[in-house]
Length: 146
Length: 146
DNA sequence: TGACGATAGTACGACACTCTGACTTAATTG
DNA sequence: CAATTAAGTCAGAGTGTCGTACTATCGTCA
Image (tube, helix red, strand yellow):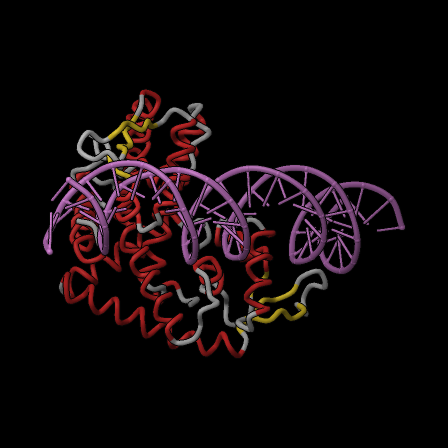
């Protein structure tokens, strides 16, 4: 577990993921969005434009409804999302991106683009594209939801 | 954030990482090692064969000394690791893999190999090797420690 | 050689995250 | 319409993570 080449692919995936996440959060915090946690972001990121149901988010994220509810509560309190009734089901509510949340998106996207550009610099454009393609493909067998 | 192709690389990395982790933990739990958590594993995985210092582990994992201490406490209580004095520094102690921990390693490695084999089946051997190579390369710019 | 700043680790308290189990309300189905 | 299923909430517990503050030891240099 110590020889760099022997690291399993799982850990190798985790290292850059973590680096990306840390960069994004540092950037958001620097821009005043300092009440945004990684766990919240993982939910926020999966929000459909027309809004998503709690149960749906839970399934996608691989977490329980309660956990998602807890995270959405925080996002709502901070003004990043809002809950509106689902017109198609009286039991359900749709979680939608709210005004403050909309302002985060371009900022986060900018930081992501910046990090991706650094990675492209290091790897070269061809290998960066290969990485993206392979990961998208891998998703079809590792992401239980689409 | 909804079109599959538009997912940022960070999230694309996270999805298979999470899938791998879930598989390993399910496998370990099924074999009776049900008191092994992901957080513990991330520490355990980085343990050098001759033992590692807490501070060193903290830096590598990007966590604080206290957090690592807390996780090592649990690993120690469960018999996976042991702490021995560092002969070269009276302040330090080395965290080493203990007997029970040694039994986990081949089991976990087997599950990892199984998952990797499935991924190779899906991606093809050539692209799996590309993935591994690219990730190892990416590590040099995203892992602050080696 | 001994005082002082740096380093390894621990203790404590706070908060974030996640789960299980039990519940309420609304939809669906026979 | 009764029974079952599905969406979401409430309450409680355990884990993971951090910041601050502390002790013990090390290394250095005057």
